[in-house]
Image (cartoon, rainbow, N blue to C red):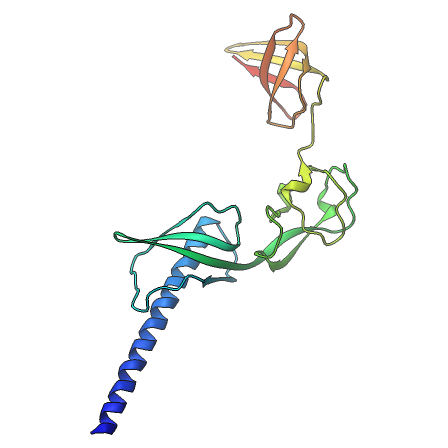
Length: 222
């Protein structure tokens, strides 16, 4: 009889243990899906580690996750888990592997970056500096603010747009309205890149705001 009780207890413990593992896996799996949608992650190599201990019997069929004041895309993140009328704050570690952009060779400061200056490699995204570029197209034609060395990950803090217009430069201003266009010369009051807004001062002293086109002209729409 004692032997039967022991086997029964072990069986119940085994079922409970399996159930708990399934629930924990389910929550991690749901977090993985949340992060893939939140960050539009193409990589399948993603791992979520929950650092906040939950009650052993905790299970939520349809959890709702939201990010809480996070400035990082990966690594340690704060997550609000809503399950019905219950709220749980979780500290979660997001590990991911994917492609990111590095310098193929040394890029001297002030260079207009070209595709041949760049290379994409695969590695851990959660260990990279903040705001590392994942796509070459986001870096090409930008200008680096400091020397970038071979194999160094490139971040948005290292680059700026390529200025089509510079401060105090004489620029062509095109004022456009319905069925008419007026062209004159103005002076730019700041630096500006393609598709950026910029303020220009015209001959009579009036200041206008327009958008820079691909030719470095300032278009003012009426």
